Amino acid sequence: MFYVKRLIGLAVLIIIGILPLEGNAKIVGLFDFDGTIVNDRGLGATWITPWILKKVETLHTTFQQSSDDSITIALSKPEHIAYYNDRNKVNLSETFPVNVKLRLPHQIHISFSEFHRFQTLWAKAEASIGSVVPVLLDFDPIFPDRERLIVPGYYRIFDLTFKYYRESTESRSGNYLVHDLRRALERTTYYSATHTWRGIAYPLLQSLMSHPDSSKNVHIFTSRGQSAQEYRAFWRQLISAGEIPAHQSRNTQWPKLHALGRPESRIYGRTLTEKKVEVVRGVLNSLYASPSKKHLEPDGKGGLYLTHTLLVAEDDPHYLEEIANYLKQMSGGYFANKVKVVLLNTGSDEEVAAARFPYRWTVFLPGRKARPASDEEIMNWLDPRWVKRTLDEGCEESLK
Image 1 (tube, rainbow, N blue to C red):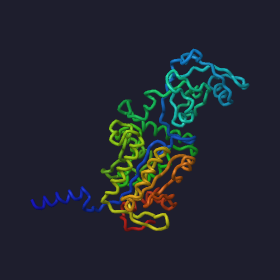
Image 2 (tube, one colour):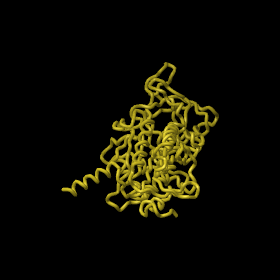
Image 3 (cartoon, rainbow, N blue to C red):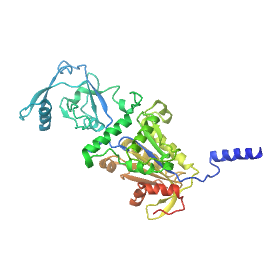
Image 4 (tube, one colour):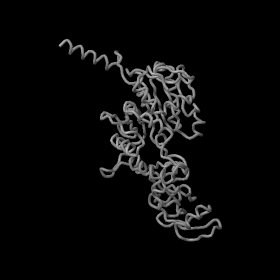
């Protein structure tokens, strides 16, 4: 009985963190999904999660053309006329402008990039038509027959616009994440080396998921509403595609999901900004309290030191600024000498240059300071051998 009580007492001490535990080093990654793990922005992006826009059906004034009928528009760009000629098997004159009739689809599926490229042109609401100047959507090799010549002012956001960012409503075999990945792989094959579905943070994710003990320390925080089960199917699809290694351990734990678009995410806060910062706070505090032994990290000056590591990856400038402000503030607090915190800005080069901390990789230092990461640090984080060495061989081994 004495020994049973003693074991229970030791367990309690371990749980509350009073007694240290020997364990694997803690390397934790916290990733946004769209624009960070996957590349859904810019001309070379092959990951497309469709946005669904609905045609405006109610006229605001009697001067507007009814969208129920073919509408007359003026084509004034050579590429518009060339597309119209090819699609309709006609040979319109290239004397500008050329008036043509278009029958607009009831709904259109567009990419994130297309929506934001024409952001000021879409209808603002039902019965409030936007720009009537035609635009040409991008060619998609997966859907070569989709209508590309549209009038953006006749389309608006509605309740199903973000359907494919939510939990699948299809049959039991349906999974929007898996479908998007398969199509992204097909597009990448079609375009060869000029396009990619992999986001800027993908090599870091790949590195951390190269080992089962670091895979379980990967977190995903996203406004998407997909379930943890759908993400597990997505990870398995990546394994099937040879994108991440298949761990042989039966106890492999998948990345932890913080689905901030689901109702239960209200525990993190009211706005998405509050929720993202709160997830960072929770992961950071958990890492600070970890009983795992530390690992060796480059200090940016050619030396090494013992620490835990948190790597946060995000692409949206607004969320990045709020997360960076929080990390800078916390770098002057209690955790600074135990946790190395790194922020990976996966936005465009222009967005990185305009950020408060204008570095692709920012290391936050004790004393509320920040510096760009060194090449040695970045190469280590992206190298699966670094992950394996720090986890398998312990903190006493030097990095090579």
